[in-house]
Length: 149
Image (cartoon, rainbow, N blue to C red; front, side, top):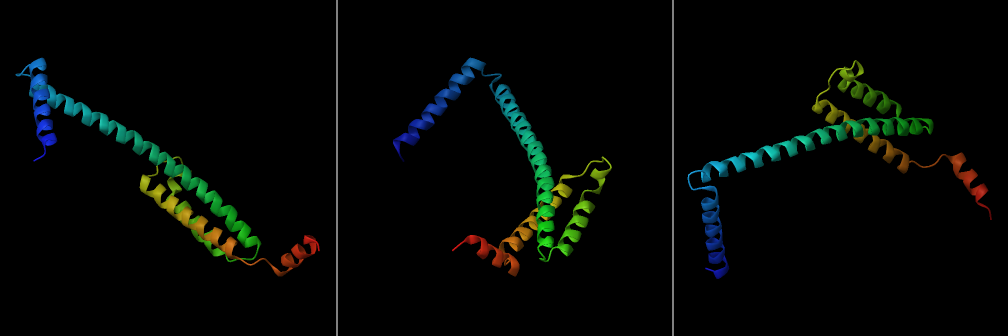
């Protein structure tokens, strides 16, 4: 066995003995458990704060991605790409997931997460359709005409 490991064990034992002496051997376990409980409460409060922030982030992203999807879908429909069915379907599903929010009621995190995923998938699909679409014939000719010699 390495000497570092043995030395570390002796150091930890000495620190525990010193802590027991300073606190008092009869109260050492009580204080130790109180410190552990305080650490647990602090950690739980930290996790609760992160959870609230994550919930707010998911709600904001769900709304933002839905607006992105709508705008990209309208642009795609205006260019003659397949977008109308996706616009109707995703909008209906999005509103169905979040219909209590329309009346000011509480919407659970699962509904917001579903709306986030739905709007995200819709936005990605519309982005891919717009990026991979070939420009209309008239647009290609007008671009060549304005490009110069």
